[in-house]
Image 1 (tube, rainbow, N blue to C red):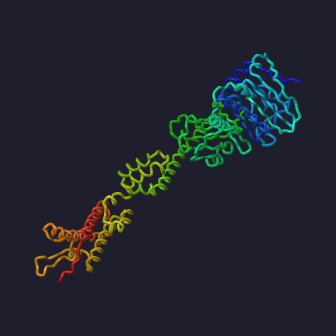
Image 2: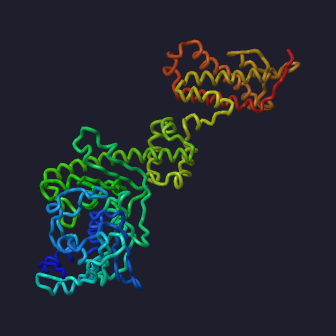
Image 3: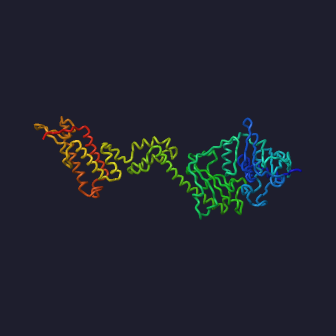
Length: 532
């Protein structure tokens, strides 16, 4: 009994070496074979010696191959499985076949010169070897070396393929290989791929989108697409191979990661990764999948329509990403600073708000706001707090709390009125006099040239000099003016006629500043009980 591989050596050289000369695509073809063989797991082991690659072993627990399968299926180049066996699901996991052209096995020759296949099916083991140099010197038929032929065994079904005498001379980068394979396959709970000693990089996922939320019932692609598109918290390094959206059919890559957009200048594309599964691609009347499964024929009417849809979909995701990112940034800022950004900005005058908003919006471009920029925001808030025009007046403490609610609600007349009332109440409490209105100004009056002298009820200084006496007189005059110019008009006219026609926001602030000045003079005042 002998095995034979019939071929044109140029076919092996062109399709095997040139198409699958890089590691991930070649490994992907072997993994696809395991997937189609109903494997639940594939283990790939990489062997090096002093940094030089020596061998790669691919181990699966699938159905394995019989001697008939080896000769009539595995060793036949260009065999279309779907035409011969039908496009039907597998027995155990109900998988539809991913293989179609029968060229994937040529990936073996793109990686190694010596290939050993050890396979078991239903208790029978077969093992054979293929040698690259011997194959090239053959004419149209090559006979692999048989080591084991239909040997009975108690071992479970499965296949082990070892690639030795590797063409690769540089050390394996297992992280990069893991990342690349993750972009070629959608691994589900019934199929896992394990790389020995792999330390594959993981993204810190920030936001994600699925078909359930973006493809509505009744739309053309509802029920035809599945996807998981994610954005990372930080830009994805170009060298990682994780940028872009990969397109799959039946769990296998059919279009390398891209953005399906003419313009990719937006920094959004630095954060986007994910996969889209479109199984209907395998069922189109024309084979639109390239041989190396890296791209589709986008000229086909259905793929052209699909591309237009995906372009629009990713554009919508980009817009939603910006909204989510801004909201997350605000939430982080509020959590780390205790500042409600929206409330803060809405309280600022238009010209002040524009400057503050520019600073805040550009802090960190949405990244690490809480950790890196919270101190900056806090410092800015201290300089420009909510309602800064009121804050910058530095009102007396006894006045500020009493008028702030009126001011913040834009009730400027009420704020001014409340300020005068608080001042009047302070005068009554200090003097003990039952006075109101303009009569309160009399509390500052005095007669020092009489016998006995009559000092003021409330004395704000020593009255020893002309300047001090002028200040005392001014306190009374300003108190009288405060009542007559502001409080009386507000109390004796409809508020709607006074505000804002007579008392504007600026008028209110100026009145409060005057009241604050007068109130401050009372802090060190002396209370007298003059004789009548």
